Amino acid sequence: MQYRRRLRSRIIVSFAIFGLTLTALFAVSAVLLRGWLESNLIGETLQNNLSGYADQFYKDPQTPGVPFEKIIGYTYSERKFANVPFAWRELPNGIHDLDESDGKGGRQTYKLAVRKDPHYWFFLRYDTTQEMNAQRLLQAALVLAVLVFSLLSLILGFWSSARVMRPVTDLAKRVQALSRSGQVQALKPHFADDEVGQLAAALDEYAERLTHLVERDREFNADVSHELRTPLAVIATTTELLMAQDLPPKVQERLRRIERAVRQSTELTDALLLLSRSERQAPTDGETTDVARVAEQVIDISRPHLGSKPVSVRLEIEQPLQATAPSSVVAVALTNLISNAFKYTQSGEVAVIVGHGRVAVEDTGPGIPLEDAERLFQRGERGTNLVKGAGLGLAIVRRLCELYGWEVSLAPRPQGGAVATLQFDKRS
Image (cartoon, rainbow, N blue to C red; front, side, top):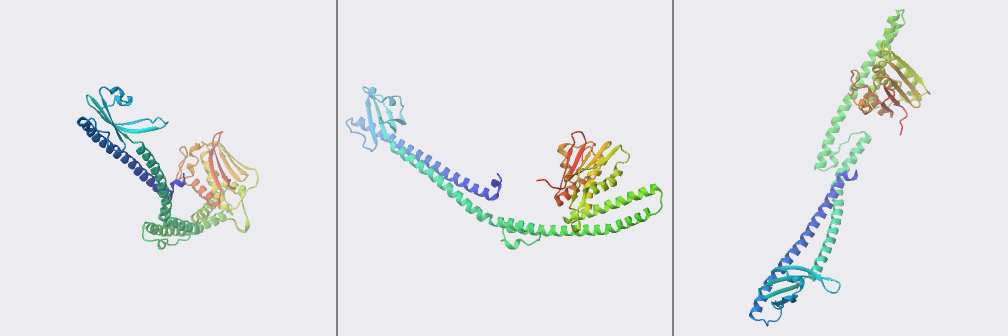
């Protein structure tokens, strides 16, 4: 099915159908025209000869037979009507096509001109067996011609499609080469000033505009990231200095919340910068990120979302798990999943299970319909029964997974609630 949708295959099929239709119509027209002309000409000739034959008989009954090749005349008087062949007796005046046995196991066809006067019946018989055999041969020859011309049309379709599609195929290969290399090169100089050349020029213009747009966005994101690091560093340093002083417990707790928010903002800034550059980074010196430790930190940072709700939090580490990615990236992905569970769970438990190449976040919240699970990863999408939000968190997680080759999924739990799974070892 996929091959039939290709433009070249459509050209080939069009040529084949055109050739088959044209030759078939020609063959059918030739057969019908030949049959019509032959039938009318023979019928008219027989009718004229029958009138002359009858008139000549009335003038001189002793006139010998019809002086025409392949035409036999019969005359029956009223006393001999019983001798008329049975198949001819009920025939009215005019021309008739008859088919009967030849007495030798075969069939013979003939045209019969009939004229019945009160006292005499006249018949002219014209044997058309030879014409019918010739017509069958003509039909066989025309069928063979249809097949031959259809094959020629198919061959012509392959040849023409190759020539017509050559510049389009060349353009497609050059575009694919550009997408693999990541470097923009002009396409228009390689093509003539025709429809394909106009398409190449439009692609050049689009690529140039897109390149400028991407470069501008990258520069903007880099500048924003650089500018945000400075005030975040100032806030972090000031918070650290304040926490070193002897302050009341409530003030210390608020300072810790500020410190967690600064850390979360720094991690989010780093992750968004990686996404804007489409740049995959890993920890330096061959180190890996301890996912369990990051999960513990994320749980601590996200606890304010629970407030005073009767929800217990359980971190279960089934086995150690390492990820080849910066801790900031892992933290951003887990923060969105865990904070969502904290937001939407009004009572019960949130369990964060680490091990076997994945982190599973299970909650006892309102759950999600199975048909909405994939839709929630789209930008701006939110569940129908969830609290207000921008609908960006899960979209960011999905983009990070695409960048690092991970998998993220949402599913309803049979016992109620939902489970979000972040799989670090992408399954086949």
